[in-house]
Image (cartoon, rainbow, N blue to C red; front, side, top):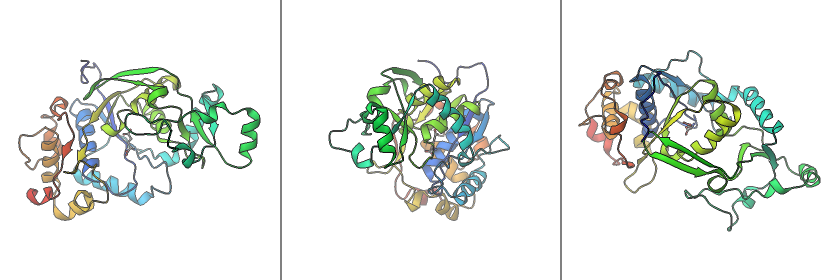
Length: 319
Ligand code: GLU
């Protein structure tokens, strides 16, 4: 298997949180792993705020993320932090490029139309768009435009995308089967995650993307976009998720994983960092440690192969 760390040059990693609330244990774990992956090899680590949706992502949440990362000791190397909400003109330029090359078409389907019972689904349960609006005539498009503002979809071809994930190994997705045409701009004009993340990683010179395995399959349309827009794609390493004992993903609403709650419990971040590093296979015991002391120890091959269960009362044992 291709080794994630084999590369002559120093990596540029990043953490790209969506500030739709305060960080939770899962976000800290992702940030820490991404930081260690880049910094343990003398690379750069960039922070970007993915606040594309202005309603879900008020600036106060982003400010809180910066403060919480500082508290944890997770530093970033970019003096200017890109906020996606301020980069619309940049996305617009690449969007035009895709449009001019006939990769984009308007979609008028409502949410209800997309979720009809016989809609095709990908292996992970996502609805795969059946391509309904791709077949509209120019006349039909004109007519529909009078009634509804369309979203914009990117045509994804019937092509296999293969890559080697740094944690999960060789991956293969068929864009048409596993994704279908994706929305790259919502009907309210907001650019979609898949487009913005690719442009930003491309422009920021990111060479290494470390993030949760819920985004593993997203790497396929992103790789397609990297190539189509002329960027060099990064390498990907997806992390097993932190889950509750009943198998659910950690949610921001759970008090015991919220960093605000955790900061009330712990005067310093070291017990928490040590616990997460232990969960991530980097320490033999959950002992208090500073992020910088993890740098010489870090080995991405020690990250467990399966999702990681967090007991409800975990924080009580760390005190
Ligand atoms: N903004 C995304 C999130 O917070 C992560 C995007 C990425 O790492 O590619 O879930």
